[in-house]
Image (tube, rainbow, N blue to C red):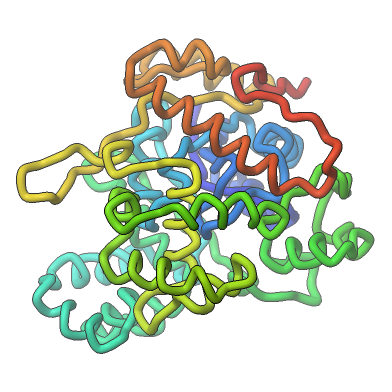
Length: 391
């Protein structure tokens, strides 16, 4: 057995994802596991479909085993998202490589860029960020020789994977990304963002070129459908509460509170609260974290000076698998350093922190339910779901 892992959102699973899996398998990997976001995703949004459906589509599209990246890791910053996912992969004890898509595929060049970035002091960054630059823009200013590399969002995430892999012994494998992160394409590939745009506009027939399974429009979820519930929760927020949210700071909290009364909808709120160095995605993540009640204590270990170390997820939940995935799962169960299984109820009983993260998983699913297109669709608890086994 030679197993590789992929960190993904599959929101939704499309031909580009199938290509990534195939290229990874072509490199000689016999088993492929994916660690996938659940109800809420890293760009600060609800997933367009249920995680078990997305996981099953991934297995039918070439993956063997799909595990869930639990909240709040799925909603965290790029670094914490990567660290959380890699900690799950490393804990399995049977994964030899992490495969990721990137605009830059030269691992040596990526590692050189990472070395330069890790050598940058916070004192060098502060004045640039204070001037209005985002973190990636500030980094690009300080390491101009890697400016082109840092302009690619997947290359930036690749750097976070490389950082998270340090000390694990897991090999990084980069697959060339050929479609812009948020672009349309006349080829057989399109970005997930472009496909979500088609789904949101009801242009399902046009999605057939990129999706192996045409989705049922009644089973789709979009953030704007649930904006009333999210905004209602925010109206009662105070600054102290907001500052308990991972990724929130004084400036963000003040801008959100100050923008609420004049915002007619959630996207207008994001537009008003955004600033030169506070991005839309960062605002969206923080707002969704607050909406589900996630706090710094859920993801960081407390330390005296107010800083924190990232805690690993307390368990790994199996969403879908095929026969090879079951082989990989059997091997992982012998070597795994964290509880592993398909039942959220059973996993929740493994520790007090596991119970907290399981309850957050359920809360995220309930928030996603409020964002459904079909208002008559019944809610199914995450505690009642089982893994999908593809024969």
